[in-house]
Length: 401
Image (spheres, rainbow, N blue to C red):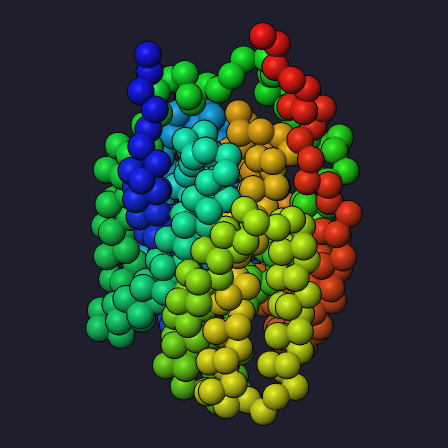
């Protein structure tokens, strides 16, 4: 008989993987001003590369999840690690906007598909018992949040002490540390392939024909728009307002710190109450927090309070959203279906980061993008309310004896 993976092992290795993969990219906003200044680029040039990264991350994640679901996570992970490290090297050496887009956009965008949620959550979903699944997903998401907390001061220190170019090369070496973590995600073949009875195309048609899946994708689009716009453009926004760069570093670190508590708490609550209400609350709360931030006098403490509040809501959508997918469609193709929903998230990310740079260059202000961010938060809060958290008929029917 095939031996099942140990859930603690999966959580430790998957958590460390997300810590590194999510942590490194979370600090890319710190490179915007020194790199645009050194190369004479506009903010739109920098923003477009990161927008492309988010779009390609989303576009390739369903395929990475599909391969991991069918053939195991390790092979996908190794390819992702090579692309991740290579992309950081290209970022460091690029002298043109197109070269920067190749490294930061194309290479790292594809790399993130093979090193983050699609492969980790698929393994967790097949390893954890149904009653522990939401909590396990929350723990993994919290690990990714810890990476965002710990890597922000690390990257700022590297930039301050070694310069932005050498900082990127050091991060490329750090990225290779993700490869050995695949040992804890190596599933027995029977678990990776999943139970027979539904093909990949049948699973795709079933999901995209489901109204709840469509609403889930709409809400996740907004999630991507909000968090990536803030994550990339907040340091520049604060600098424009006369704030010290240290305030931006502390703010992004606080987002990561409070994100740990937010994602873990969301995972716990997802096992105890309807997940759609958790998602609606998160989106409504984000809109309210942004409004208060823009209306309040701008001081370091108002920035820190904003960062802490947004941190609690930052990636708390991730375990809950994947929990909804697992509840409705099962776990056989969780990596792939989660990847499709994440693609919607990354289309939003693309627009959030790119419009942030584009509209700033056109108007000299981020005001329009902040307004769009608030309106989308209200829309997403409403969009999640019609979701029905019930297994599809295929899973609701009793199994034959």
